[in-house]
Amino acid sequence: QNFDINLLKTINENESHFKNNFFNAASQSVIITGIAAPLGVLTAGIIKHDKKLQKDAVWIVGGYILNAVVTQGMKRIVQRDRPFITYSFIIKRDAGGGYSFPSGHTSAAFCTATSLSLLFPKWYIIGPSYLYASVVAYARMYQGVHYPTDVLAGAIVGAGCAWLSFKASAWMEKKHSAKKAEKPVGL
Image (cartoon, rainbow, N blue to C red; front, side, top):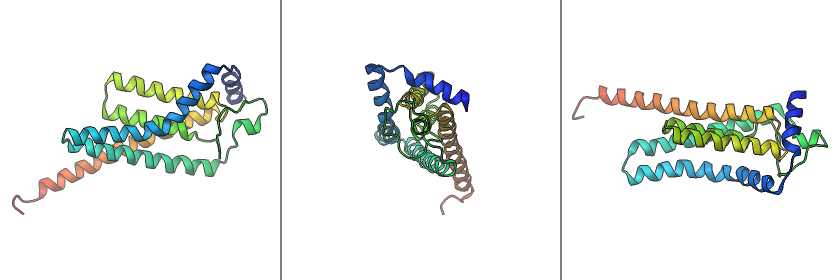
């Protein structure tokens, strides 16, 4: 616990107007990014008449749903208070309601980053995606609403849920293709 709060204190204490605005924007963008990513993939699939991209948009949404269920379930099980509640020296810079562990914003950002990285495994997608997710994670600590272990757990949950959704989609596609191949032609 000492490492957790000491690191958080270091991140949280050096305030500036620029950092307040920048990290607030990063935190607030998670919902928009979470909607824009699958919507963009779906739109590209429709424009290109690419059924695979359209299905990929669905598995991204599936990852988000799984991520939300796991994150909210963990919050209710662990019931960790926000750091600004436990420690009076932590400056609260965001509304952060409910429980702290794991970070929902971080898990959503890493779910987005992992989904896009699995779908488009190019350095120019992977790098910016994870940089964005890392900025969101740092922002949540700077804002005083999450401990470092909250954001680490959120990153693991978000990336894991996206990966599980991706694997489930690949497994279902393979199973569907095998059934299609078994069907006699003309029936």
